[in-house]
Image 1 (cartoon, helix red, strand yellow):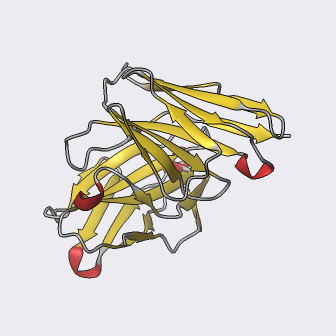
Image 2: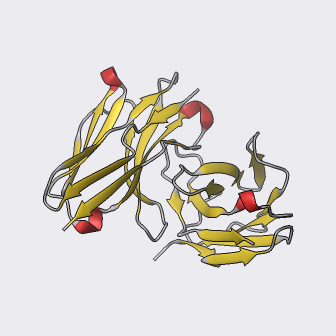
Image 3: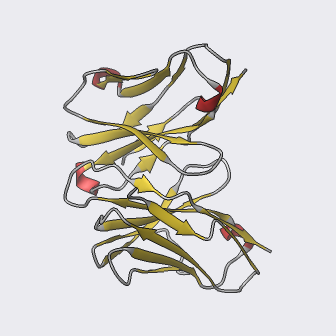
Length: 115
Length: 114
């Protein structure tokens, strides 16, 4: 069965600090997809990134970067120079080819960025 | 902008009184999902439609039903809401047939049961 673990329940940082959100997954499929979503206080889940299991290249988008390592089944998310607007709950999620597009979410990490 | 719209944003209902939540989309996606998210928890999939085909999750209570009259609209009906059904309900869409297609979420309906 697929499973996503986000061990960090809450993280608090001061603005401009870098912060890394951890995600560890379990799957038996060889083809799968990993996602990060952001959920601000307004409630909407905002799609941030998708990686497939065959592409281990790290990705950078502005202040956001993602480190995908199959050897450790991890897909970590780093925010550089955090800002107050980054405060939100961040969910890591997994979908497997065998399950279609059904997402299994981790329990989320609540990030608070203090001014 | 193409989007997923949920109405109402906040819904209050009485214990046992049927309630319907609505979702519409302009993305022309053929898959629509309903998730339930309780406070400080991950979203939990209730069911989804792939075109007109309804797919219920095994642990979704019978109290929850859904209708999809056309591509653009999907409804969540709670026949007899209990206090435990108070939650945020999230509608999402995706392009079926494209592996790993990301889900696009609406901004949710927060349901209160009194």
